[in-house]
Length: 102
Length: 383
Image (cartoon, rainbow over all chains, first blue to last red; front, side, top):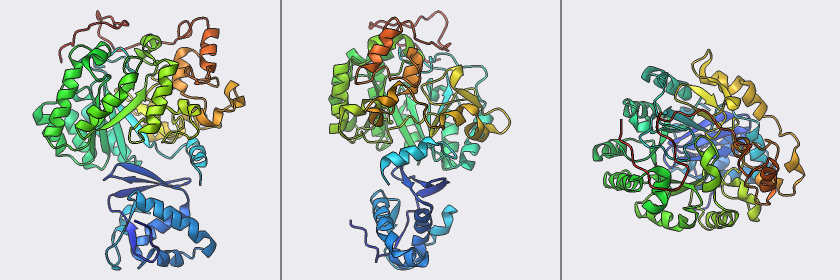
């Protein structure tokens, strides 16, 4: 499924994030896959997703410069494909964001 | 954000390992001729249950997401199930390796009831004819019976782990069929000249022609797992194999042995690569973050014979352990360098895989010489 920045997403509840110098490691306890979040900005964005009505709103809220949107959206798409982030069924805010400590 | 840059970042080290192997015991009811840890007898100084659980707590604090438990045969520890259940209850996922001999239907059901648990059954051939000479008589049947029991218990997907040798390199497709028949994934890893493998590597290692076929098999079957162990074959293809394709020793990988000693990777259990002990002040975190050995491994590679080679970017100089235990310099070629530089370097040592080989003291049972020839062996009894 294509990633749609206009839709709401969240960090998958089975995923734990571990901060690292380059960003963070994401481990999915469900599919046992490890992903690399390659910038602190991406880590922050992933943590924010559940708190906004759409991925694009999260980008706006973080004040990300428009020229960096395409890269970050590509990164989110890849994280969605590996199950690290998932679409939310409604625009209600997710409570999972705070759980992972980042 | 290419993979090369990620590998560079990872090679400078992480705050905690990604992949930690924890050998729970040197005790084993088999004596495989290529055993990396030369296992056989339990060490009287093995970590106690309380120490082992304390180590799990350290892993929780460091956010190590999962451990690979091995041995020896880890399921022989009387507290094995308690330790696994403790780890997964603390969100430290476990994958354990077993020869399958202890897999009763009741154990299989107990494992199936656990989240965050993965199991890896060791098997080194698609039939007893190729497996049993390496692992012992009856071990093929025991491993397949364990797979049946896991499947019957509804465990779900598990892994079948194969060390690629001269005798099974032509059987990988059959082993993939065998694995998938049980709903399992196939994992193939490289034979290392470590532990008892130091004395059997020369006759068991795949030929250069077989390594070419192994590479083609991996390219054609991306679902097959490798534990990143074949990156030295990278120059055989235009594209790197799936995985990080870097030596993770002391950077993203390490090994903790049954007495709590920490080594750079599962294939270098030798005093030269011992970083410290989890029993000392500061525990595992201090060893991982501060040991001189690990700090050194995280420095950029020194220039060596390989840096001038046009394929260095594809193989990264190969496996440190394979070089070390065959007596080759660590900044030189891998003994299985696909361009033949390793063979020439080995020949320069005096004898191929011979005079330069380093051997570590083992934990085998006294009075039971390790067979180095392909021939019939008896399966010893569980103690």
